Image 1 (cartoon, rainbow, N blue to C red):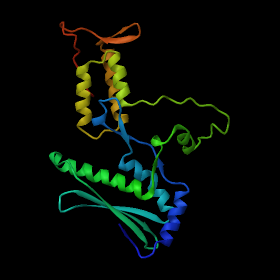
Image 2 (image 1 turned 45 degrees about the horizontal axis):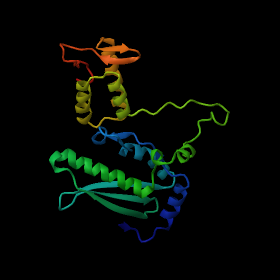
Image 3 (image 1 turned 90 degrees about the vertical axis):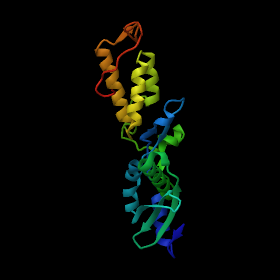
Image 4 (image 1 turned 135 degrees about the vertical axis):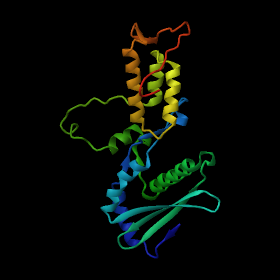
Length: 236
């Protein structure tokens, strides 16, 4: 860790920022964990930056993150918190990349180090990780509560629970496997993946490839194999 000779102005500004620190919600999920019982959700680098940069700037603070490569080939990120006075505080995080993935593995390690370094330096709070009571207190009121208006809260959907639900309704395993291949091929947000799943399910239903039996959709048998061909434009 490195720092300027004096930190009084920086720490004073940081104390004011800490009275109302940056908050964000997890907007991504790691698909490697999505096939088990739990899903690993996290806040992307963009979400963290959107949450804190303006709040820091209001106190004369700024964040810079420099990416370099160590002698051993690790991705290392120096996160520096600076003040308009010239005072600064910095720390460096190193992450070993997945060398089998080449440049993509390096970029993933560097981005991870950026996220962790930024969260640690300015204490960004992800409200998904709070207790329910804490989360309710942390989110700003939209005005309805003060007016005595009760608003319905939509149930939270995630890819894993939607996949399980659709599978119970007859979504073919072949389509699920192809969805995983499509999702793993790129860094897609959960919202995009949910949209793709909903569209594919609706398409198969409209094409008559899913039957409705007592409110439960089940796949039609094809050629005695009981499989459904996936020919949709989104998950192919």
